[in-house]
Length: 248
Image (cartoon, rainbow, N blue to C red; front, side, top):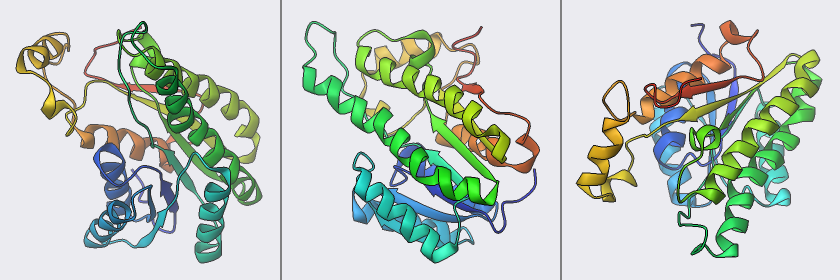
């Protein structure tokens, strides 16, 4: 794939996990990276790793559920770099429980963090991308948004919402040289999975046709492909990166 030299990428929620892996992969390919997290230390730590990977960028502490903070972040980026080429809407969280035990606040929280944040960030970068007639937006959905997952009515709803938003926005901006796609990770090994009981982990792995957990790098490679010039004819697509867990 072509490198991303002279591209500027915002990766939300890039203080850890998948977001950090995406930021580092895009940095290795030459993009300047805007690391974002609600925790300043996490965003700065990722920026240091970006620099070690041979690129540079900007660390922005911002709550991406807040429109004013999102707009300020995009302004900082355009003031510094003159443009935004790539947006990866990765910020997200979980509050799993059966619906009969789930608090309404846990549903509302996920709507804000997982779905509204992606809408706010996409809205904020749309105009600068349209002016340049170039842009790549990738939304981090989930196989839970495709197939559903027990105990995740809130999470599955928001991740399915991201897919619908991806397709609608792709139609809106395609004529301006902007592509909008989604990546749907399956079971990925993160700090969160390390806390799960081994018998549950064994059951989950048994359901994956390729027979292993995904890695954060697996997801990062998929994002890197979708933002590359070679993927310019792909838009409104949902790329499952799940080892065959959800097919069809």
